[in-house]
Image (tube, rainbow over all chains, first blue to last red; front, side, top):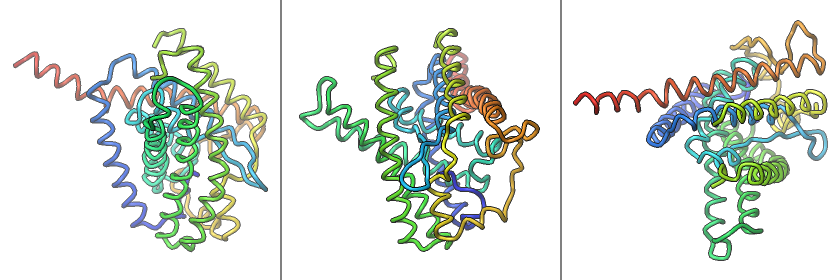
Length: 211
Length: 106
C-alpha cells in the first residue's frame, strides 16, 4: 500500500505530510511521559519484525498480493502511541533505503499506515473488547476483537490512500475507493490471521508483553 | 529488554526475511494492481526523487535473486532496528532528560 512518488498531487502530499507530522508530534509527546529505557529496544525489535513481515507478500484473489501492516499487532504490545512511532520508523527506512513508498508521499504513507490504520484498528479492537459479553478473560471475544481490529486497520489505511489518490486527480474517487476497499478487505483477512497467530505465540512465550 | 531476547528476536526477523526472499509472492500488491487496472501506474515511473541503494529490495551488485533479496532484507533489519532506537533516543527521550535536569537544578 506504499504510495510511490508521482501518484499524489503536491497539495495532497503537503496536507497529508502536515497531518502526519502533527500526529507524530503528539505521539512523541504521549510516549515521552511513560518512556522507560527498556521500552526502546522492544520498539526496535518490533520495528524489525514489522519490516521483515512486510517483505513477505502473500497472494490474494486473482493476481494481487498483500502483506502484513502490523499496526494493531505493534499497538497490542507497546500501545497505539508507540506503535505510531514504530511504524513511522519502518516507513522512513523503507522509503529511503528501498524506494518502497515515495519521499514526497512519505507523509501520506505515514498518515495512512502509522496513524489512520493503526488507530482505526486499535479503536475497533478496543470497542469490541469493551462489550459486556467480551470483557473479562480471554476467549473468542478477545480473538474476535484482535482479528476485526487488524482487519479494519488495513481497510481503513487503504481507504485513506484511495481518498488521497482521488483528491489528487490520479484516479476517479468513487472507483478507486471501492477498488482499494474491496481488495484490502481480502488482504485484511490475512492481517487478522497473522496478527492472531503472532499474539498467541507471544502470549505463550512472553505473556508479560501482552496487556 | 534483555540482550539475549533482543538477539533471538532479531534472528527470528532474519528468518522471516529469508523466507520472504525465497517464497514471497511476486504478484503486485493491492495498490500496484489497481493502478495497473485503472491505468495510472505510469505516473510512478516519471518521478524518481530518491535513488535508494536497495530499490525493490535487492542489492544491485548481487543481481535480483533470492540471496540478493535476503541480503537487502538483513541490512534492512539492521537499519530499521538501529534507526528506531536512534529515533527514540534522540526525539522521544531527549525532552524527558532535559526536564529531569531542569527539575534537579531548580
